[in-house]
Length: 458
Image 1 (cartoon, rainbow, N blue to C red):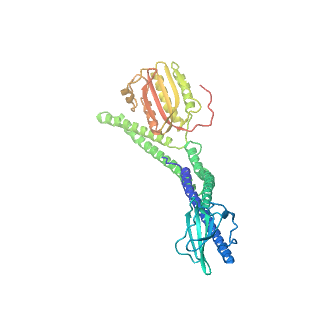
Image 2 (tube, helix red, strand yellow; image 1 turned 90 degrees about the vertical axis):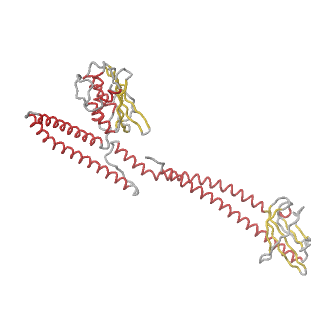
């Protein structure tokens, strides 16, 4: 069962947090920059008010030509930088060259502790301004000194700063995201290493999970090794117990059978018949336990190509009258995940049956079949014999069932194959062959490809 990726989750979580942090940082820096520029403008306007106040007090007349500011922005029309001296009735006595076609506003409200009034407003040209007004008394008259600064310029600077800030922070974010992905990948390397180690155990390349791991996942590796050891002990104990039970029952059953064989009568016949059944059942379940214990051992794999090559050579000698065509797969065919002897027993029984029932032609093919659960090894064996009906195909998979008593055999071959197939979690299907006879499809679990080169024997 798989659900997402830890590395991907770490990356997206850190990326989401990084985006939020960088966006918040961008707005915070922009706000701080805007506040700094606005404070600087306010201080500049206060300085100009103080300069005009000093010039007014020094000259003693609001209309004196000595009252002026050296900042060239007050000489440029529509600059947003204006100053003027007027009385409480709004009568102008002096003003900057930049005041052309506008009327400086009269600020309302109470003055601060320094006698100032401030406001933000627009001139007739749409320029946003910060305005500072201060009342100065030159006995016996009072005058209002008004100075304004261009706030639109500051807003444009703030906008440019915001754009550049987000570009820089975006570049920083990309670099941090790449670093986060690298860190997440690096952090997951021990887990990938542990996964490969467990897979090597499952594939038969190792008997335990080896390697050193960080303290966060080292207990997991230790528990897996302990589980493997415990599983091996359980299997060994179960196999020994079944063997002991089977051997313990064999002697009493043999005694009953021998005693019944020396007697005559209905009771002796019943005892002899039932003891035979008991002996068969003991042998059957002992064999099942042996198969289950053998296939439960982790870490076995077999080269199906080489096994089928070996089996076809043997069958050609046993059945020289039969032509066996083996369609050999390429080197990418996955290996069978299980014991070599088990695969030989399954494939050998099926191939032997095909040779017995064919009319001289048998085909063998190996392939890899992929489905939603993974990759399976597909072994197809067909012949040109009489074939089987659907009903007969189900019958022959039963223990000891034979459709033709004339052909030598016990009838247990297909049942043994089916038993092994069930143990390995595979499947066995009997179909109609294109050659006219029976097609047997055997599907089994696979292992990874072996690095060992296969010989070119045919």
